[in-house]
Structures are given as structure tokens and as C-alpha cells.
Image 1 (cartoon, one colour):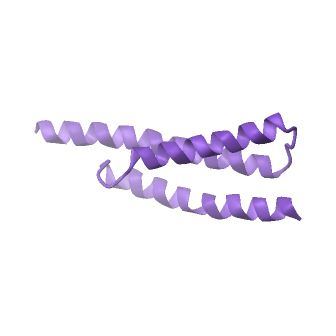
Image 2: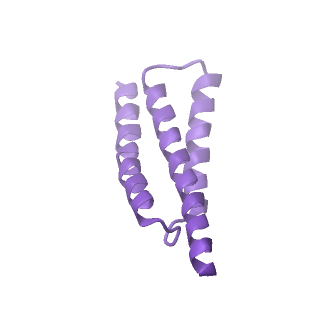
Length: 92
């Protein structure tokens, strides 16, 4: 039962990432995005993955941690892409 609640938590957290990724991709600007926030979330998912791995409690829920980590990683990559766009735009 605890895995069901954990999976629900991770899925609900993960629902926002695709929306944010599309928004960041379309916006082509890093303005309004906090890299510190994204880094904290990324590190949090890494810690969750390490915790599950060290405790040998790898279940189906583990896959949702990986998916969310990848989405946050993509959002971070988009931040740096958009930062590049911002810098290029400032030079014009």
C-alpha cells in the first residue's frame, strides 16, 4: 500500500514537468525560470534514486523516479538553451 501512495506522489509531481518543458521550449527565454529550484528538484530525485538503490528497494515505483529525473534534466537543458537565446538576443 505504501508503494501505491509513493507512486501516486511521484506521478503527481511528474505531471507538471511535461507542461513546463513545453512552455520553456516555446518561450525561448530563461526569464522567470529558477535554475536553483530545478537543481534542488533534480538533486532530490537523485537522492530518492540513491536511497532506493542503497536500500535494495527497487520496485515499479523506481521507474517513475527515473522518468521524473529525466524530465527535470531536460528542463535544465532547456534552461541553458534559453539562456543562450537570451544572451544572443541581448547582443542585437
